Length: 506
Image 1 (cartoon, helix red, strand yellow):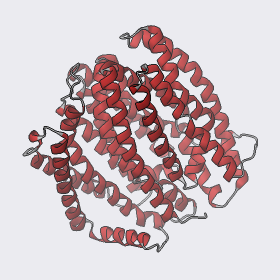
Image 2 (cartoon, one colour):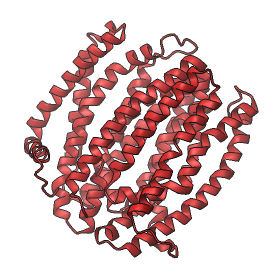
Image 3 (tube, helix red, strand yellow):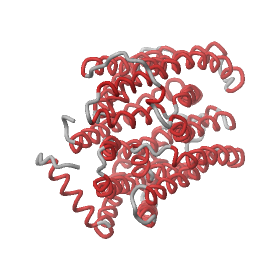
Image 4 (cartoon, one colour):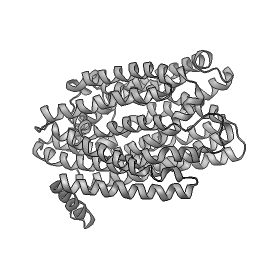
């Protein structure tokens, strides 16, 4: 390894944080333009189509995580032959998936406009489906394999930087096309072509910087394939069940409401996840080298980072998301966008999704797919069943309730497994973190009720958001020093060592 693990983690975190800010801003700009120029129905149908197309991800379930786990050791010892065999197995599999994807898209293009969404004409919807599918096909056929290699080699920051460039370019293209009066088809075609750039770049970069050779593909180079699939299916269900259920039981305008709230809340989760960037490959590298004591030492720091971020960001999100959405959708009156109950349920679901990040990261990095497979299956079942039943009974809020039940269950399952089977420690450590974070959430939102009702403009929103952030940040800092003083001081020491370029071993 040419670069220290600390440096790669910092680069990944920095790039990831920058990407989420750029992605959030660019996404809000693009979606706002579609809402204003085309309406909620158009916004809803494009979001719904994207989710239906993403179902093909089930076909590649687990392949990325398993391949990455298989690459950690050969990369750490520069075993080029083994690396090429893993890549060959993965590439062969992904190209089959790409061909299956073509058949899948044709089926969706026929079934979706006939039986699922009939608000628009058949050819209008079918052609839109084909256009939105372009970038996904190129990613599966060409880029995904090499993206996994780059990430396994602890260079995930390169992937993120390319995503930043793509997000900015996509927004610029969308603004130009929409302002020039282009149809929704042309706008989405421009977006798809922009998203073809990253897979092409990854292909070029890997072939230039790695010794890539054609070798005979062997399936046994990707072990625990089906066990890993259970984990990916669960993650896929958590991401995609909501829009599917809302589309089928509530209509595309409700999908538009869901997509705006989800976009804001999910981007917070992405920010938290990006702060874990580099930890997966670092823990995988430690495990491959047998550095288990080092893994245990750094888990507590990893937890402190994740739970502190949740405690700072999510109380602000819960307090400010409804006023934000109302200002954002001002002038769009074809559906009611004020949904405080839905905002609460969706926020709680996302919080528990974040709570499991440290434990899931390690479990996946060390390849314990089979051992935690049943929990993944249970999570998927809970999400689907509860979401459908609650949506039929309560409407939009039902899908958020389903997500919350599934994510809370899975968060505990990951923490419990890690405590009992990987790193010996009491499960009460997990509950302590959860209790503190939720307490901060409650306190901040009780206080914020004093002034949230006074938000009438973007200026007042920014002002009160800053006040709320200061409150949650202060409470988080206080609780960190009260309950995790040693870890907090150790984290500060590491940050100082990075700033002053004292590259110690993570």
